[in-house]
Length: 137
Image (cartoon, rainbow, N blue to C red; front, top):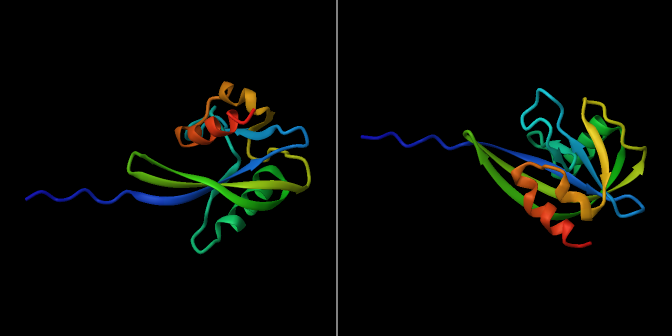
């Protein structure tokens, strides 16, 4: 008799698509020593148990980039499975209300035009959204 594989551990991650006045998009580069170090991503982070996704995103952006944001409409989602993990990634539009992005956890940030998005290597879960946003130029 075979024992079925245990289901993957799953968690939810939220990320923001933030545009500046010139239409550029905010990306953050994962710092050295972290999973997927060196890749660029839309800023955000993990949702805590019992936390609403929009609240989690506002919290993560305040903690990581020292900005206050207004969370807008959900844009899309992605599911990524890797090494026994299942990650549900929720992307939201967001607008900065106060502050300038100031990295607080060792990451770099960049404002990137949609036309240049594909020049920045991103995690696989971000690929479809990058393609969609890059096509709007």
